[in-house]
Image (cartoon, rainbow, N blue to C red; front, top):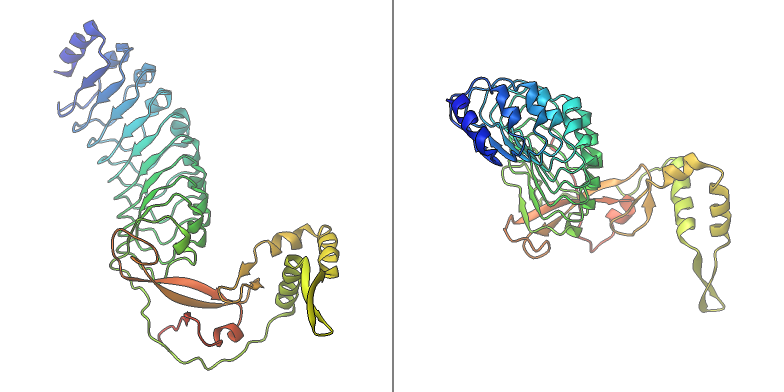
Length: 363
């Protein structure tokens, strides 16, 4: 039947062809003669491979191969240089060949849901124009950091996998608007997530999260779904520790960062206050130029959520509880959300009047 349909199509050279649900097992090679074809529907068949001749369809922009029997990404796809939309859901794909991805440089939409993928290749970064990527219902345990180089990605779906974390570079996805990660095993979201300045929707329902990143409130979120996570409760526990012993490296780092931030300082002379140039500032700036490793290390310093002071490797993990509706202005209402906060010392933590709680782990 498919051969007959193709022979008829050859006479008219159509731009769109629907061969879905035709019980096709082998795609006829004659399909390569449809040189004006832009939209090809082949879903709900028994296709297990594509003829290499299909790579000559240089005008094809939409291809639907959903619900077939593919086990690998067909090599013929690498020649479809105009392809923008590709559906591969509901196959038996176990791996993705990076060389095939390299040929689809104009791909904007990829749906590879409900396959058998255990990992994504680093070559995913070759999809330089991808805007929508969906890998729901696979067997992924991690994501490659190269995925974070997809600078045009706006929507990412990876629900119903076995992910335990996200790449630390996730914040590089500057145009990301929606991320759906429900029903995984994610224990912690990277702090860099707050750098996704366009992120409006986060769905992390059904994971193992206890707390959210510290700058969640700075994101333009509209919807946050976090049901069925073991989120921290607001249970006050008396602090018994009053101070800690810092290493010489930590003390030195804190001092240097403080001096580098204080170009001018407030001094008191004869009962009057005035600003003067900080001599340590110019000395530190000159000296640190000769130690690039130290400069890079200090660039990783964090800021205390209470006093604003810098710290390097020693801090106290705390949590503050924010109202999702009032403070995050969310359109849905997830209630009170635990957000991570890092304090530089017990001295800050024991200061009265703040709203930070220490994170107490059960015995």
